Image (cartoon, rainbow, N blue to C red; front, side, top):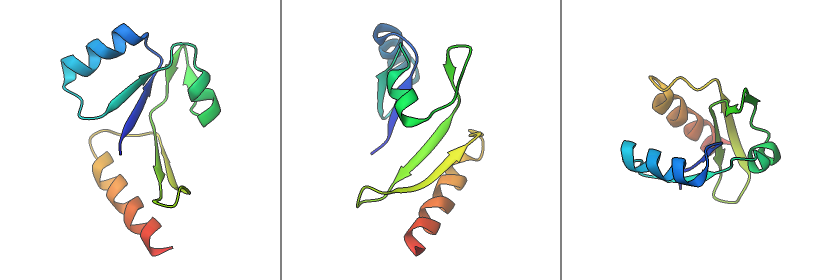
Length: 86
């Protein structure tokens, strides 16, 4: 399952999901409470891009910071393979 978290208000997050036809859930977190609990860095009211891979048994398998959307799919695939080997 893929879930995103945005600092946008709920109406803005919904509009973004529709505009970009996102195939995943985007949670609105305008106060930053959820992001803070997850340890996601925030600068000037915006979250840094971070990917957290959770294993089927609920453990954190990998945390990918400084996400570069151009090669992120390959990074995620490599992290999944590495987590599976553990």
